[in-house]
Length: 147
Image (tube, rainbow, N blue to C red; front, side):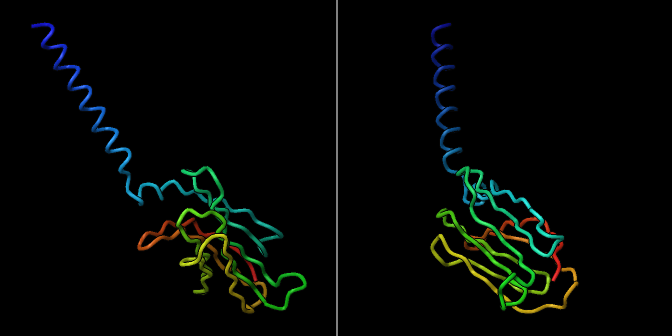
């Protein structure tokens, strides 16, 4: 009787291990995408800033969204930039509260997109970055920047 119980317990443990492995390896893309994180770095009194995007699953930087108010030596005006540097299948979208969007979606990495235009000097706006793939989107918090 004891041997039969031990055998059944062993079979149960084995079946649970197989079920757990199957469940873990079948993680959905949305679950994998939850492993993105964001970090904002302010440069020069909110007139420039960078939101870095990390793909924590791969352990690498995936890209960033950048804001450059009147870039030095540039005549493009206030510029929103999205950079995708990791070939992980996800795109990077940089958003400005005016509705301006710079997106790398649909392009192979590495790829950068700049969207420029003058804004009223001294006004405060918000920037945020989203990681996108198909209908999936995960976005950072919003951060203040100035024109």
